[in-house]
Length: 194
Image (tube, rainbow, N blue to C red; front, side, top):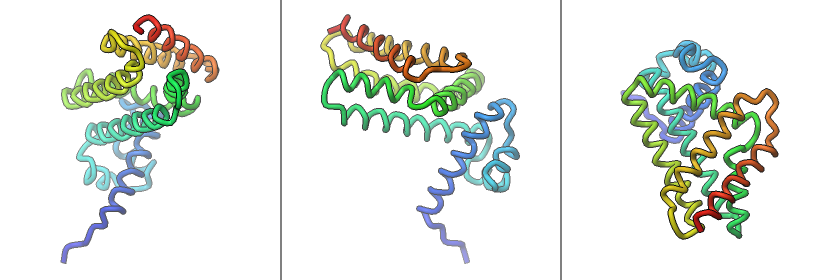
């Protein structure tokens, strides 16, 4: 008799495995981490990871999809809750630099993913989907002004990505400073197009 699968428990287990993989990749780097190490980090067998994700690449793709969706949803929620355009800009900047630990962790894993995707067409397809998702999110924000939204959305992403790389290399990043830089850049960018 076949074992019955509880879809809620399966989803929770998959989420827990993706979180464990995310932390293992952060701690050891994508190139250095193995399915065995991720399995040990998650407290499961390697076979469990293979069953759920197929391969290391499949696991990385699932990890990136989950965290991109999480960040986009959190940012959209913050934008919806902000009552004024200025507060929307502040909410956006705050979500790009949520906390020192989470920002460092996300961009470390993301840059590892970006490097791996440059050599793997399947991961590059996921990178392109991530770019589209952030572009849509950035367009929502620049929609606060009237003209040139497409170009400004590209500039906005360049600003955020550039500050994030600087953040990673900063030995003692001041979260307030990075948020203020992001907010000032966003404000100038949107004022030029409005």
